[in-house]
Amino acid sequence: MSDQPRPLTDEELLTEIYSSFEPFLPPLKEAYVDCREVRGKWDVVRELGRRITRSKQPTCQLYTGHRGVGKSTELQQLREFLTAQHYFVVYFAADNEDIEPLDTEYADILFACTRHLAQAITVQNHNPLVNWLQERWGALQDLAQSEVQFDGLTLEGQIAQFGSISSTLRAVPDKRRELRKRINDYTPSLVTALNEFIREAQTVLAPEYKGIVIMADNLDRIVERQEAGKPSNYDEIYLNRSEILRGLDCHVIYTVPISMVYSERATRLEDNYDKPDVLPMVMMRYPDGDVNEAGIDKFRELIAKRIALIDADLAANLDTHLFDSAATLRQLCLMSGGHLRNLMQLIQRAIDWTDQLPITAQAVQIAIEETRETYLNTVQANQWEILAQVCHTRTADNDDRCLRLLLNRCLLEYRYYDEQSKLQRWHNVHPLIEDIPAFQNALAKVLQA
Image (cartoon, rainbow, N blue to C red):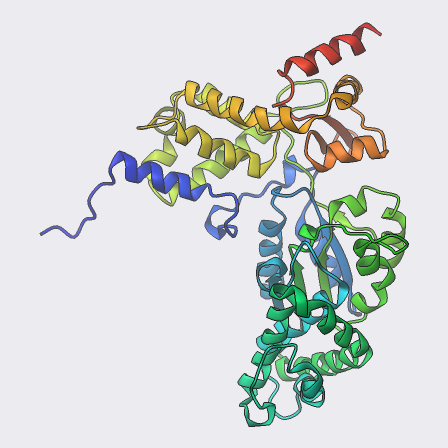
């Protein structure tokens, strides 16, 4: 009998391809594509990494970008770089286990950092975090919904109790507020214990590691809430409690909601943390409408790398075996607007209309039309003229009207360096909007004015 695996059926192959473009799965290391040249030379090592490797003091940085643009993928690249530079990196996606995005406060973030540090680094003899929790276990035990006796646990079991508290903060709404109140009362002592732990941990890790880096990802998914007469949770977390978030004795990178950076709060963020880094969109066209071939090539490379994990021959023949023509693939890339998640969603929708390869131009067009309907439902009647004006001038005003359209990706922002090495920043409507009749009518009025 042959040891060779049997060929995949058409349905199995389409299933594998569909799964490889799942937009909400963790990034694939093997499918990474360096997009610096088509992101205005934005480089995660230069923007975030060098501030860590070249600083003699702990750094605290904010990092953001539109949802689905590739922030987590770039953080994983930075993680690899820093690990190679002998830093101990503690990365966690906060929305998986640590926070409830619809109801998050600064105490949740501080406790998440505490939990992941305690679980990642073993400090045997003198563990300040274990001592901190032991002293307060009587006050926290009931809210953590744990019946264990702390003193009888092993070190591993004691550290696991941080997870019990974190789980309660995330999953049990009726306990969350009271638990937060108690943790808030203990915040000064928790920060002190956390920094003592960090110093002990750095001693344990030396000389193999130069320092500790915490990466708190997916905090940009926190939903803004505001009660009458009180600051919003965004302001409370990132501005009013900035001293606590900045107060850890190690390097920290927090993701931040992009709406804070695109707002009047931007200068206060820069005052408190230095300038936040924004991951730009991949540029598919220049402001004059000409196609940026480098952007198309990068998305082709991204597709090929994911397909190569399934079928090398298919990856080598994208224009004939995966798609029915180079024009079909090109149209798919252009209509994504340079937004990675949109590209993956368009591919999946085209596969929904495919029974066997290659993916046809008709399947891609149907996927485009179905996705376009989402934007048609998103845009309000009074926003078509705003979109048309931005399309005409390639510039979005810095006001609430354009901000809302930027946040829901009806407007896209691009950056590139021109021949004189000057940074050019410009805007346009998402290409899926361009053929909507209501937009075309608004654009005609703007051009006639």
